Length: 546
Image 1 (cartoon, rainbow, N blue to C red):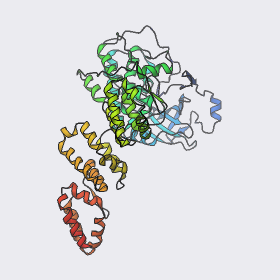
Image 2 (spheres, one colour):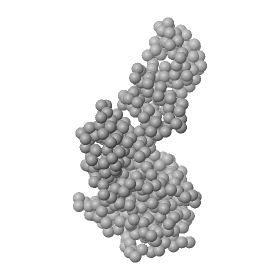
Image 3 (cartoon, rainbow, N blue to C red):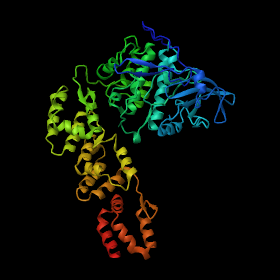
Image 4 (cartoon, one colour):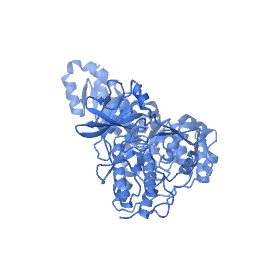
């Protein structure tokens, strides 16, 4: 097997590492000048034992798991114990008072059936202390940070393969890990796979949508460029994945000795340096994973194809080394993609910046064509449409952005509509009526790839100008992909079944007629089944019944 040459500098051994489920024996926080300060563990056993909420060694958790050893007193959010359970060891993660993992993250992680993701064997509240706990397997071989001298074959065939599958599993469950690094990847019970663990700062993305969290939880050096702008998406994890692979190859962190400001500068502006002694194939994988632009960064499919021996292209990206940053929302922005997404997420402020002429000088750094597009957007009277056009012009592969909503695709738009039915979202009606949904479809090539679908949305868009509610429900039925009509507590999926139901209720036909005439969703349902030309006849029949 190929052995990666050792670097000239060795990473110092960390004497505080634990061997299982460790989140590092200390928590690092960055102070105001960007230097790492260490918040050390509480290590006074006698003090802890006097605390009523402390669980001493020997106490049983959930009438089953007997604590036999403390792995880590304080991970920052919990205490880790080794416990006995039917003659085998497990790990209990007992959270500190008033701390509990995010419900949606924990629930979705528990639903995953993958050997590459650490399972939760049991969870609950410790009766005496009222502290939340999780029981997980004990991986006695430790995590990736406890070993050096990894071979190229091991990095590629074990680590890269396992982490890629693990990330796919959690992303399918709507979870972004947000802290992929050697400390959080554990050796399996043999040497054939590794396991993703520690979901302490993970996030759940509703419908997989890119979101702005409003918090800055991150591990500098592993965090993707967009994380510095607080954008959380599955692509974050693949960037961290690439940095971790580089660290394993170098046997030390690639940003060792850097301040947090220096790390941020490299992350946002410079290319990640991959030394020449790294084997070319591994180097290509790291390059693909560490693209600054998340839209061209490798993800699950690219990594899987690459692992299967395909020659996967690594897209080039714009060099931002000499770019003067744009200040927006208290952050420095270096790329057009990031500017577009920040405007999308802060819609009102984005309109102010555009229509006060603040954007032109920044975008000129990327070419006069961009500056001309900004001018064209400024001249649009409707400011929401102006900002919509600007985002579409600046971003290489923009999601559907409108008045603070960010949808990665039409499926997510449909899910949002469905979630709130029968309520009508006035913002989405505007998106339709102003023709901007059609612009998005055209920009993404839907008019060419699915002309019938595009034509259907075009008809709905035109209808929104005369009957916005009816158009909204037509859009809902088109995007959701089902044909359900809820009436009198019953779900109808076919016109014939509904007609039969009304026929059986002839004695109350007048009441039904009155209700149906006021029900815009009913008429949208008829249109969805292709009965648009029959609607006036239906109205006539129902009106006669009143």
